Length: 430
Image (cartoon, rainbow, N blue to C red; front, side, top):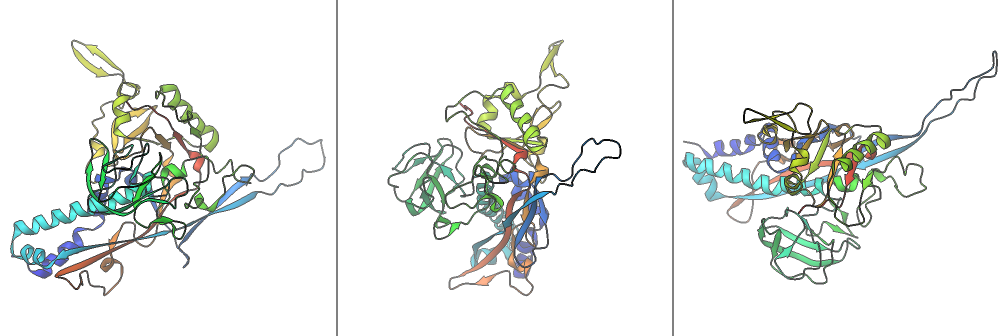
């Protein structure tokens, strides 16, 4: 029979590195694809990266015994990233602990409840940050919608119980809906039902966690992949990527812009030529080679024939042709389990295609993962504070018959070369 102490220790150590990575893989394929790098922060909580904007040296022909050419100095700039702090708090009732310590079944159920809660809260919200534009979008409105349930343009990252705002995309400050509870999420119809109705919404307005984006606070979110792989500054309350100005005329503008293949907001078919253009641009602009494609499941379904392997038939049996667009023998096994990263059975020109169900609609992104990574603080993954700081109890008593558990994490999505990524916009899905 388990004792109370057994329960506490189990809850502490169930969420070690392997377990937390497993939970992350279920919700955040991008999280597992990105490398995590840890550096000495020097008390400032910053990553500072030098950027080469002009190569050094001179090379020229001379006459025999002629004068040497003058040396040319390199030109550099700095990209600086401030780590973002995150904290998570949840409650466990005394009754749950008491029941769990006296029943193996109840103990298993308690652990399962913890798993579900952590996966759907902590890692789903990390996912929202990583896949967005720096605003932690839980859903983006395709048009004005002022009555709950509210339609969003891709699989919602919100889930019942959280408190959200709908913020105007025009200024990242005006709230169309202020601190409302999410009461239901209809996955099939892409709607979020809230405890109140918004007012004055427009296309592009977005759901985010309450009081995390405003003029007073800035944006309390990670840099998002869609904001990093772009050719313009994020704007609004989201700081410039690495505090580098991408505006035309600045010293590092072109070096710090990613290529974007847009179509003026008009949806068009994703073609082989379009994806090859994207690959070439990364090589031409960023001097890199794509290692990963990311898109949502709807795009994968629509363009399955483009992405799958070529086949031939012999005696009634279909076999893939080696060198085709799909991965020969691919079974999608990399997409599940502790090492899962959303990898599909498909390749494009030898580059793995990853399906993230929550990825933004009408958008495909490719990048070289050696240039995009997560900078973290002392702990690579979110951790209960009892694992980070000595002599801090795992459970903190509250005024109610519950214990409180606090988690902590520092991180930021970094890049040393945004041009090593490419974004294809306006991809027709249906």
